[in-house]
Length: 180
Image (cartoon, rainbow, N blue to C red; front, side, top):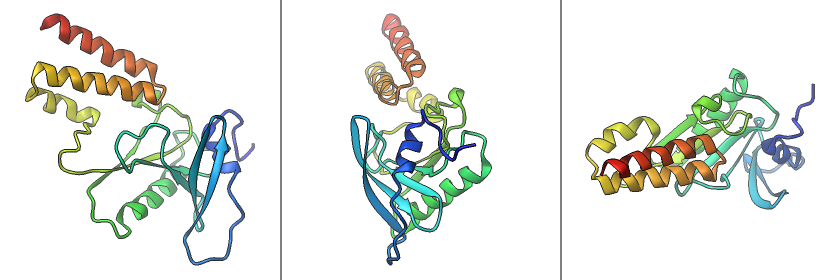
């Protein structure tokens, strides 16, 4: 079996990993042009992990940590490597609260079938609501605030290509507006 999967966008970045150089930095940086996008990708020198900003970050500083070999959602080794690298990144000289999130399978909002960990730096008042915090947050929101929250979530779902989740938020918005 190949180390890469042909139709996986993350594998396309992994294939472009530059040769390891003997330098002091723990990572190598490369500019990768894949399809219509170009981005800076960081490759960890000591582990099989790369990281980069997603196409549509949900918050400033949002990064994806991805194994440089294809591993779908049930690989504990790949998930552990990505988490170790993401945690190291999150705590290396940073004093910022953060979330590390791994979504496993489409029902858990995984849109690319290649293990990856989301690093989300958090700040007081950043207004990023995680799915399980929505009910608690909605209880104290006005109808207008709740509608805006649903709109933002639909936009975020569409941005990552999750049309099913986008439809869910738009349906909730329509119900809310019809009840108002």
